[in-house]
Length: 251
Image 1 (cartoon, one colour):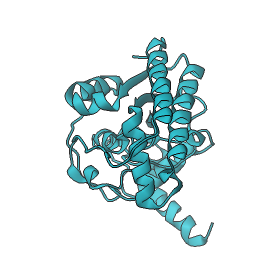
Image 2: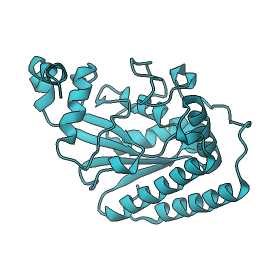
Image 3: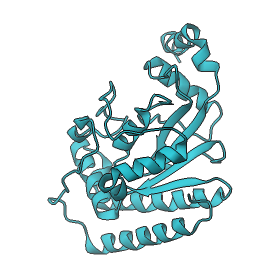
Image 4: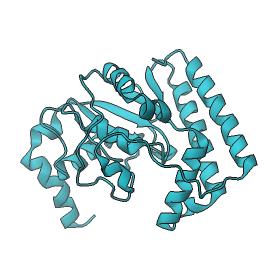
């Protein structure tokens, strides 16, 4: 680490030590890519008691994870003076917490066809490996399996489970449920466009996220999925839904 990068992290702590050293409760969203997590993150992070609206890319099972998140938010001037919670979304299993005991846990998944098509479309736009159908399907299926394993490994930790479709089609009801679960009042479907909104590596890069509210998006009808891959994904998704709803710690 260079001297310049060290100073970049140290200066915000020196300038505002109270925000850095005070205690916060933590909220984590466990989900997958292209699950409409960016808009939900903006909604949650838009609340004045919650700091964080973008993916932190921090490995939650490592030491000093919370300190890294606070430094990131201080650098971006996003650690709010009145906040009680730190928020992050985790879309990849290598960043999952080992234990969920210290979190308010939200789980959100999107149905397979829309998710996989959107992952492929993102891959084509970025010129990345996600443009490959099999890679997109493998990621989606593996991610759902890993989320389920993590929930089962933490049976004493309550979690709030929603689907993307419920969030988009029944936004007010969904936000009332989330507000009660988190312990805040009046989560709003309207949010402000922030500095890192639609920036690559931090969330959704499409123009949809810049709408400033929850909207329905167009499907990627130009992408045709292999029937066998889609069928196996649907079977796994339905099994995931069934098993999650049977967990005693679901609220």
